[in-house]
Image (cartoon, rainbow, N blue to C red; front, top):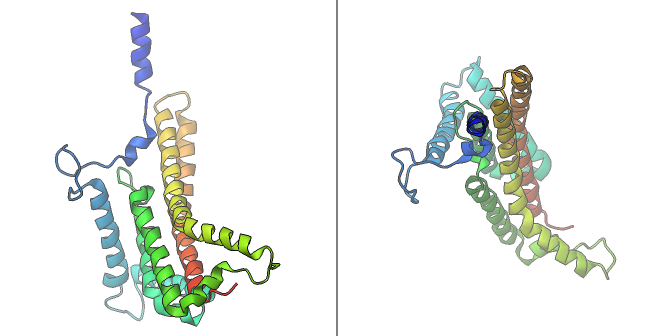
Length: 252
């Protein structure tokens, strides 16, 4: 009888930090097909709506004295534009709409995921891998369209000794095809890890003895996650700019 009581008490403290990442249908509890609306679908739509509201609706009046939302939109515009111009030069500015869309979508999805009881779409590889693959394919196709066979110069390290160049070419080729893997895992992994840690601390908050420490830890981690939400969008975007620069100027 005592063992059953102990088990019951222990079960009340059991929590699963990864449950927050489970994909669930919005309506009913049936199987999920490719056309089934899920929590991922909902929060992806909300991220798109947030980008539209920030960049289109808030700037529609183009007030001389900008509103707060218009100021945020203008700051984001200038931030991404300068990043792209600094890395890729004037040649890269024409691709600004694509880079800006990537940045705003990821940063809005990340911040929406910080809302309590929300769903963090960028914690799923099913979201980050298509984003990374889109960048990879875009950059690769653009590289061959703009440079032809000269794009292969990206893999030929002409400054290295001649005997090492074939070996380095193989290494460069492997690292090039690993790009979408690292590009997607970095974003999803960092976002997922932070949310899981917050959930772990939240589970310990149920224990009265350590609840004050747990609440402080949750607050600190949440502050860190706010920073990570922006940094990971920034890292994804700046890597996109670097890959774009390689496509425009492939010579080593």
